[in-house]
View 1 (tube, rainbow, N blue to C red):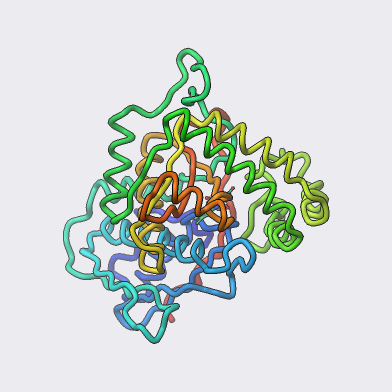
View 2: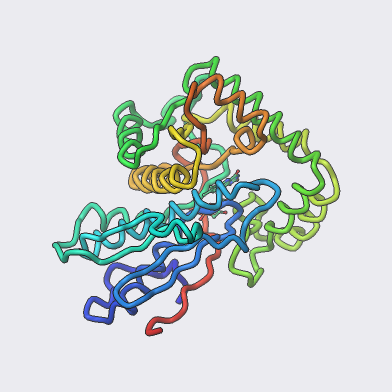
Length: 352
Ligand SMILES: Cc1cc2nc3c(=O)[nH]c(=O)nc-3n(C[C@H](O)[C@H](O)[C@H](O)COP(=O)(O)O)c2cc1C
């Protein structure tokens, strides 16, 4: 089954634990992940399901510590928690249960049976409709004049997202003053130029840019990169161009325009910088994105300044004092037509 086809109605309520976990697994894999690597593994053992980090799918150049990898797994974990609540399970999650197995990120159990949580059911629908949207958004930014009638998030919505992140132990900061926004615009551009000047970075990135027709079920398809379907055939050429040519200046210009014009720019910040904090960041990310999705609000990422160590130190110094910046993304109401979903590996059939 294509995980994007998962529905609340088809849950095998009377099935074996294995059948039920395999169904819930579909919600987990719809989570966002760096370059759509889907760096997670699951194992069903009796009544329980394990979530593992799949380090074979790591991004050695851009993410040498596997920080984004664990964050991605955290997003999948949050989706599982939502799905458990939506189907009427209390859900018990034990994170990092075995110090000798650092790849074992969590054990999940169904827990007590309760009535299905309506809000969790809405969030489950949001898991299926959520997309990373890299196109421009409606509305003005702290650096631009507003277009009339353009929609931005209200103060109440911004506070609601802060609370949702805090619920996962993560701080959400809005970079909404012109000074802070300018600094970030500068650092995003610098990050692009530093990363693209590195042939290994370009090689890694180009590997994950794939035509829409690709059957790998992972990576970033051309349409998610803004290449129109009619030009899908040029995607391998674009990937080769990225691999062999330093396009740092043009990438910087494109990203800096998006960041300067973004109605809202968010930074997720944690008190520690370890796998626990990264797993929490991923859960906070998914919580924020799904809440935003309920309003029709989309996000896209600009993690360059947090991936280049020297820039991350500057971001930390300027915005986080003794805490650690983990993810940078913009939020807003999209301008274009709905986007198709990006591909996913299907969970195996149930009944193992
Ligand atoms: C930890 C993490 C880091 C990401 N970093 C970037 C990024 O720097 N640039 C970007 O365009 N997308 C980034 N993404 C978005 C992924 O590329 C996207 O989630 C993936 O391609 C799947 O697409 P979807 O979110 O539309 O399902 C990131 C996602 C996660 C979870």
